[in-house]
Amino acid sequence: MYPYLLYASGVLLLALPSSPLIRRYFKTLSLSDLLQLPGVSFGWLHPLKAMDLLRAYAGATLLNAAFAAIDPSGPQQWPARLVLLIAMTAGLLIQHDLHRTKDDTLHAPVAYLAGLALAILPLKVALFALPIGILAAIGLRHLSWGFLMTAVAAGGFGLLFKQNYQTLATACFLLTLPLLLSRLLHRSLVLAVRSNLITVKAADYGRLR
Image (cartoon, rainbow, N blue to C red; front, side):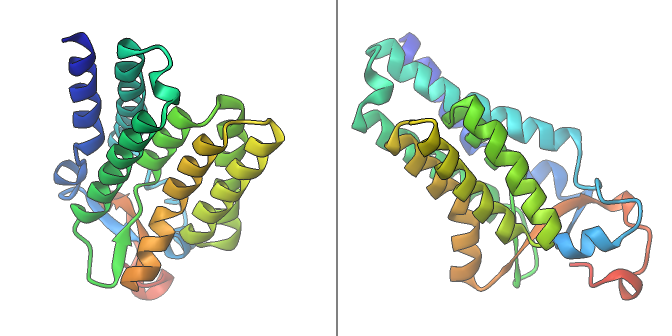
């Protein structure tokens, strides 16, 4: 019974969308537009985003714990890895799908994906990869580059530290999924930004979505 409770809790945390809670208080904005607005570069930060990170991390961790409770070697076996990949992919897609944006944009669940990365990557790899991705996104002013460079850094440092190939492949797939979706759907990736911090006109600093 205990492993199944862990499993159900992990799936629930991964699948729970945050968009119904933040839709009323947030607007979506591209990273390049956000960086042009003075004083609101951190407007996407919010306690609900921290909850996204924590529940993604907790959900993936609980799923691993459920498999380990059944069999100590369970998390390393391919059935467990496949179930975990499916659950995390479904959870990530839900974060994209249930956040309403205009037809030409796609919400990027950055905090949620960071939580997944911290859960499945060794900490020393994640602590290298995530800052590189953040700096790449800010420097190149595009979320797609941030996701791509995070995946490249995770794969590179993972190989350098001789980590499990399946773990690295799973992480790289999840980190590039928002980029792949945006290309397949022909939509640009956007961030959810607190509405009360956007106090300038769109005509002055870029188009608000």
